[in-house]
Length: 182
Image (cartoon, rainbow, N blue to C red; front, side, top):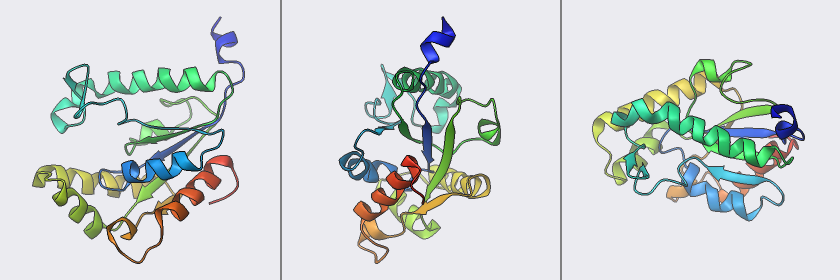
């Protein structure tokens, strides 16, 4: 039965980013141009950082992250099994998640949404994040840069900078997800 359920799997593209990279800000622009691509953000089902009342989006919730990841694996599998391609916005992975046979089944591709460290720090400070969370986000960003060679820069455009329009960035990400290049 498993083989029958997985027949027709659509491709999976994962756009990872450390906190403050601009994933949530970029989401409506991605949705606006998605066409037949299913675009989801792993934070979408959270209410104030919690799922069914269980905190998920804070460092102290690390013990529940594997279960949350499995939940998203099932959600993505349900969409892909009918052949729909998926673009999933997610946190920066650990190295083992990128290995063949890691958390996600193929076909899949990874890219990183990134921004300069000073922009990330400014965004997170504006959210009121504590210093420890900001430093964790900076470490996540360094890990993402080391692990994922395909990257898209959000720069300072969302903050009034000169790095371009988020609609243009979304179009580039969507072209990559569709296999049209980066």
